[in-house]
Length: 151
Image 1 (tube, rainbow, N blue to C red):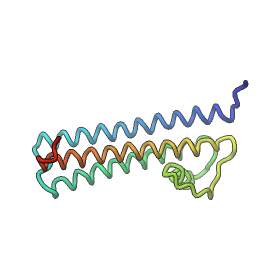
Image 2: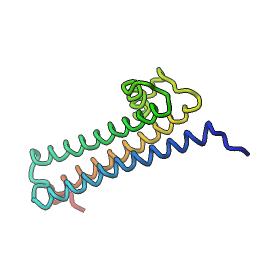
Image 3: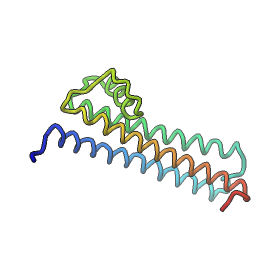
Image 4: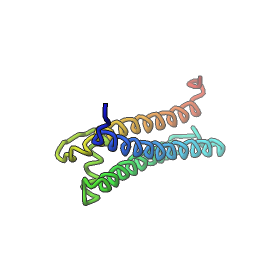
């Protein structure tokens, strides 16, 4: 069985981008862990809603930033592959794929079409990481505030 270059090259490119987005989100998770540890050392975790709310907001914004960077990375790859000339259109297409919205109003050429579902899978996985990260922070804040919920 021979390798189809229409499959192998886009697959390799897609896996490379996925690894980069995993790295971006690893940095976001690491930053979140350091933030929560610092706030804990300073004795602020769980002291009140007006202290905890900015922590959750910051973690959520950090997660959003990681997603926006990942979408931008995919958009740049689409431009490098020759699928788009303009970053705005490439970013829009990337956002539609990454969020699994899938409008289908812009379709890539057959040779690079595989990048669409790879980006959708990447986005779904990265949203899962963000959800887990935000949930872990909220759980930590709740457990710090309410002793009866520790366990």
